[in-house]
Each structure stands twice: as structure tokens, then as C-alpha cells.
Image 1 (cartoon, rainbow, N blue to C red):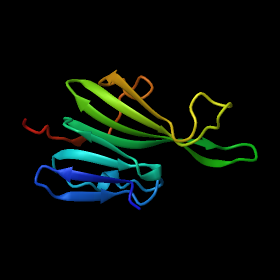
Image 2: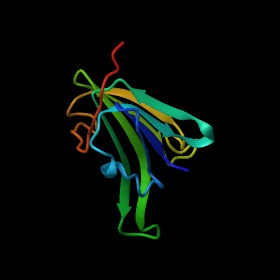
Image 3: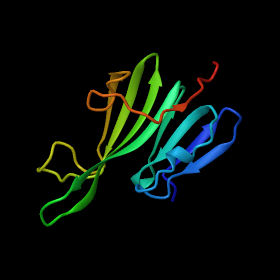
Image 4: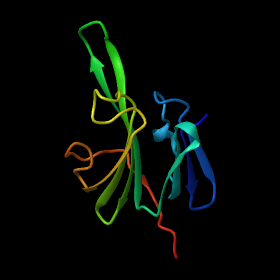
Length: 134
């Protein structure tokens, strides 16, 4: 199953991400995005629309010592920019009840000033959006 679907201003669509290791975000055509639908577990869909720009990326850590060496995916970030404010949705990929503040599957929404959207720093790879005229 794909991870997300994008609907462009011209009504065409792009189906992206065949796994968390291959989001295909950089493959998105250079068109204005009207709507981003991110498919979550158990049939839920997170929808972002009416943003000036969109971003999607994975936060991962790399363990280089110890028994559990290798890459560990931690969170998915889905973001929309409007009026210099970034609305960020973080989907937790790890964590167990009683051991961490957030558990796998939790969704956290926060707003940040542009340039401080990820741990106080700016992010790259934004895709141009288009607000619908109402």
C-alpha cells in the first residue's frame, strides 16, 4: 500500500512512498499541491490542504555501537506552511507504553515559526502548494 497521495491543482494525482525507507518525496512532479493525504495504520488518513508548501520526511537514528547496530526509524513528519507558520504532524514509529512519553502510533500536532519547524531548525525539500479559492 502506498504511504501517501497528492492531488495537484490540475486535478492529477501522485501516489508516493512504497515504504518508510523509500518515501519518493523528491520524485514528486513540480506542480502546485492542493491536498496531501497520508495513509496511516488501521485505515486512518491524515489530510493536509490549503497550505502554501508541504514537506514530508523521516527522523532516524544510527546506532554504531552495541548489539542493536543500524538505522532506527523514529518519527514521520508531515508539514504544511501557511503565513510563515509551519503546522507539523509527528507520527511516532517507536515507543512502548510506560517506557516513553509517546508510543508507536501517536500523532502530535504542533505549530512552529518558519525556520524552527524541526528541533528549532529549518527543513529543506518543501513542495509548492496552492490554496483553494473559496
